[in-house]
Length: 115
Image (cartoon, rainbow, N blue to C red; front, side, top):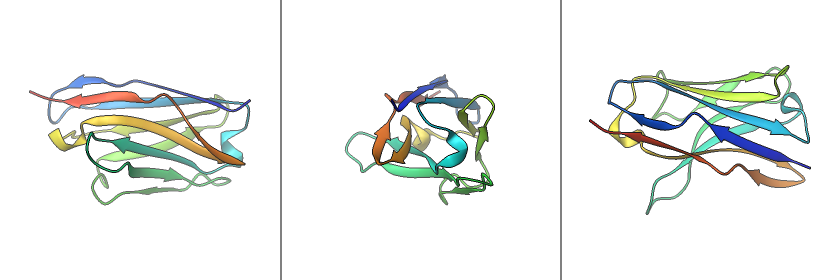
């Protein structure tokens, strides 16, 4: 059965870095497009990054371009989101997601950027 488990969130100062992980089970991450979203209370869930199936090419939202980098480790069946130069507005709950017949979501990991 499909499962996604995120980790790596936490409290970080502006300008700092975090690396989020999303361990997948029940399917191969190389066979499906993987996405990272974030949710801020009162706002719609925002697509942050997409990792294409196959070659693993990535696309990032304009708001994070140049600061965040999504990646994939096929051997570990895990996707990552490296977040650098974090800003206050990056605060939120980050989710990884995949569509395998239907949408699956992890439980989310909280990222708080605060001084």
